[in-house]
Length: 238
Image (cartoon, helix red, strand yellow):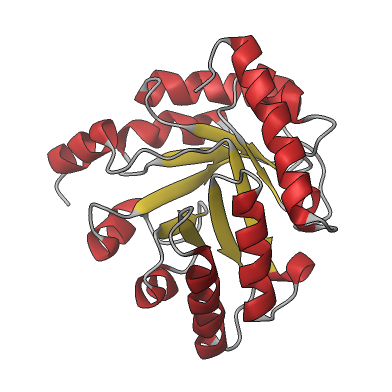
């Protein structure tokens, strides 16, 4: 993709992404049964989850993973978008709605070329310097993290905290303007989701707070209510 086209794509965005409640179906927390994962995703969507991601670290059996993704997609029935963590090839093969990339994964421009203009592409941002680069990347949302300490992922970088989140958000919006949704991840739950939204995030990405216990639908409703209330208080309600 030429630099000019990349800049145009970065500015325009292909799809509007609702980041308010971003649920991560992590196999380390949720298990690896495709039917069960589909049920959890459907319950989360029914409770107000606005976006879902399938996350499986260290994939050893791509065919089995593809079967899980297809089972989740069938259970969701298009109610909310389903993204795949890291693996552009599996997202493409499964007919998922897009992919979430880390800083060491495939470059967003290459992912865009493979997935096409209609796919959702998200990117993890860990620092202000990385946020400064968003102006040239063909992504549809960014997710800043980790905000707080978490047991769901082995993260060598220290948490940025609420102050760090605010600083990185400021730089991200300088780079791309207010049109790019920017969420927050790591260690976020019902007790602190409102603070994260008050710090400027457009939504929160959660694993254990949503899928760590039943009933998932009620946990999603409680989180979504807390998020929507905080957005409304900030004057950013939908």
